[in-house]
Length: 565
Ligand code: BCO
Image (cartoon, rainbow, N blue to C red; front, side, top):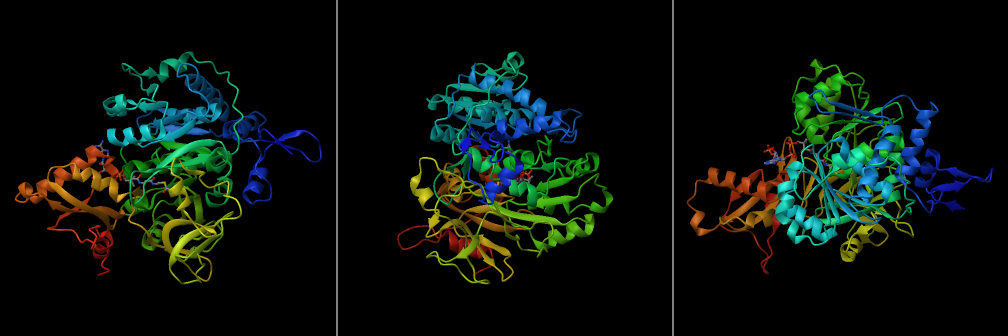
């Protein structure tokens, strides 16, 4: 029997709140999903109660610093009352209703967490985006999602203003800034006067909670929709086993707020375990600031992209004495074994790699207590049954390369994304026979460890970013020098792989200074779309390899880059 996120306690005949043990059992498929579930009401507010009764250590829920002396520390109780005020801002002056979609483009500032939790409390669908997004990216997101509201910081305002007339569904622009802006509501002002009384909406477990835009080989990014339970319950085991978190821990998961990695490490996995989420504003990544932060604050758990560790091991790490660091994790792109070994030799700490996707979360990992095979991304994690399959959906034996896939039971697992919104064909294309296919190629060895080989399609994974070649080619073609281009991955010692553009020039640009033109094209892409996608390598070619029907053969160029021809 189920009711509103609480179970009827079988021995006592009263409605008992869900416990961490229930979440654990749901993930192990030993218990069914409750009908209703709300992360704010069923998880965060419970930790707030535990704080009051002393069942949780006096550890903040959120600890934010900006490196300039400003600091925010909120207990779960404070997070609760402040996010209730934010919820009232969203529903009252902003006029938003349950199910409305809200684009949230904020840097790593405390308000991002407040708006996130406020959306949960009100049943709004949260759509995070990186502040690197440009006008065209934002226009696409607002139009595709029919978002009713955008919450943004001041650096995003000019881009929004340049396209807002093309977004008829957008009703409210909410600015998070001490300054005011014509046509925008001020979050700070409204927040001051908002009430802290708010009743959390009883959302259904399968009701939409968030939408993440993910890039593919063709077309614009797809809208991967997650439910209240896929994010809110599905990360229980990840937090407990891979991140090895307890409520006394302080985790720093360094990711831009636009990516699901921020949600995994800095919201769901961490707060499910009652741990403290540490955040450094760090507008521009800097290795010295990063290392100083680990020596200054009692951070116990660190999670960052392999590119960050590749940058850190360039430094003399023995000079740094990390205050409390005990567990280090990485994910988002493959980790090379040399970096794992250098990190361990210099810090004495293992590096536990996890592998996953925006759509399905962390599915393989090196977990504490398991032997780490350097270069492998570990074993399948509960509740996933991960296999290597062929093009017909048959399981391949250990040692054989194929596609990394997840076995589907009779129903779609609750911890998966629900669908690509408005794109049933793309959602259906993720299923092959009894499996969900990740689009990544790999090998499983006879001990059950998975080894990443590469993408099965043309998507580029650079510095942990998933980049669609089409998006970069689209930006390049807008420049008058470009007749056509092909964008592929190219190896890079620090970023794993980088974006490389092969460009055919128009006649009038053929005699241009090549170095100058490369900089101009790079700058052009950075202005046209999110700069993390810009081609770090550019080569001018007289023509592109094509099939007989005129389709560009990106694989020929990619194989050449990776020395396979
Ligand atoms: O390197 P450059 O300086 O040439 O270019 C950088 C920036 O300078 C530039 N840029 C940024 N804002 C700009 C701008 N240029 C002009 N105008 C602006 N407003 O663009 C380039 C951006 O590159 P970046 O973001 O890689 O910068 P950076 O500072 O090198 O950062 C390094 C990393 C490692 C911190 C960063 O790449 C990073 O955070 N990577 C991790 C990404 C991540 O979290 N991925 C996880 C995705 S979720 C997932 O994988 C699912 C797992 C379950």
